[in-house]
Image 1 (cartoon, rainbow over the protein chains, first blue to last red):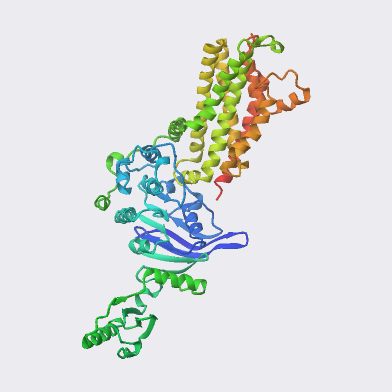
Image 2 (image 1 turned 180 degrees about the vertical axis):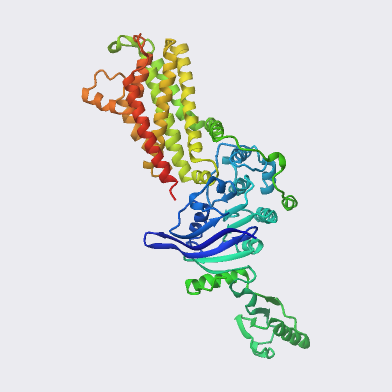
Length: 310
Length: 275
């Protein structure tokens, strides 16, 4: 599969301040690639370099085979962009705006089709200025899709969506991927990254500190299993059976937390013990750290982590 | 809903179509900008209705009044070309300086830059639309002047008036775009535009004849395009003028300002789109 985006040694400096400090990654065609990171990590700077809004200081960047810095029209015709904040023509109606932008592209989607895709059916004659924030955000997505792009840049695309609108946007994005479209997404929502991303990259202080699938990033797949439950009445931590190497703690009174590198064996030992003694373990759960746990761990460690980039 | 999304397809065949030329795109932009302009009633009132209203107001207040210094011509005959010049200047400045400053701040210009539409076609659409507003204003004022105030323009002066209006509108369009550079934010736009324009209108013979003004002030006024546009229109409208409706000197100065404005406007656009 060809690469939709290739970035090698990307740097962006403002005077003496290095905003993006040597970033390399590639995004395969048809992939959903998600850039995560705290505010001020220069995710937007990176995204805007890829979109052609900013010049880079150093490094090599290819977007659909083009150098975005020269922003050729041929590239714009194949790229859709949802910016974090950008107004549309407030006095025009939804249908007028979509038709107007559609004319800029050699390939385009029909207005009715776009409205279905983003859930704005029946809004074609609504003036943009009368739309709610969430509706405008959906119009942003429709405007990014109007030219049937091969590559979509989505900068926090579902901010301001209600939960059902968000689900719908997700399914639209997934459906686009099945058509072979590539999506470059930045988001603050871990559930969004989990739901959509084929791969996730975590950016802190202009550096990528981790990159991988949502299931594996930051060693999530090999992280110890966490087993939690309420201690039965009259039972203390010391009453639990021998759990080998597992770490046992009581993070809150009456709540046991067991962290084990051998989740199956440890949970078997605990449930076996409970069955034998006739204890019901309320709130019993076995879990791997969530993407959010991993993200918080990675970003808290910050630049110090500097994990090898896959 | 998700059922629809699951079945997303490549664009339906009917939706496919070739692009027209860039010139056709720019022309379509003019049409969309026109639609947007007239829908914003407040803006349309202040940049279009206001000068027309001032014509009606001043015309009615001074009906029957004559201006001795200008050969005893009716006051309205003097006032109409001046208020037309004012209307052109205000329309271009409000819509381009003010409008582009707003669009710079609210991200619309950035959104447009992310599309394949060439930057010149977008700006051209906005300029074309505001020039069209000036042309419509000219028609309205000519008709009102004729019907309500008996200001008759001789036939050969009519095309001249439209040519002058087009040149003036283009000049102030370019200067309006250039002025965005010195407008720090959209809220400041009306203030900056007023500071730039209003004092010039007072020394440019728009509201009253400059016959009693000191020579040095007349000389200063003549440097600026507001006076040149008003003067060119006064010459074309002058009922005592039986020669050419064109005053070459004024038009030359307007052309120079058009060149300066265009250069500055391109400078603004380059900075705005700098990466």
